[in-house]
Image (tube, rainbow, N blue to C red; front, side, top):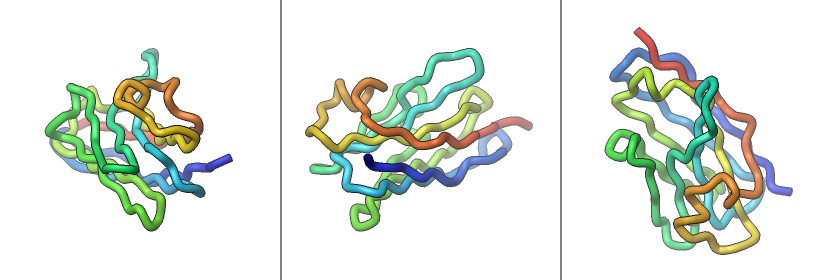
Length: 125
């Protein structure tokens, strides 16, 4: 079973920036980021397909967040910029290894096989 180790997160003022990191113990076919705010469902944020580097973003974060990777380290990063209070949530890294994903599976929680422990991002003045 592939394991994920997340780092980053923390507290930042509105308009600030953060970087989240996630390292997988094995090679994925895709990795993604989801977030869950208190009292809400876990929602898709961004994903990256390993074979071609294609990226996908939720509409609410497009233009503010950037996903990237280090293929040699099986790591994915999420750069969060121009943060807003509504971005406050626990952010989860997720991965899949057993099949080649398509957009519909990469943007759905059910498309992932393993998850990180989550890291808190808090945006407030």
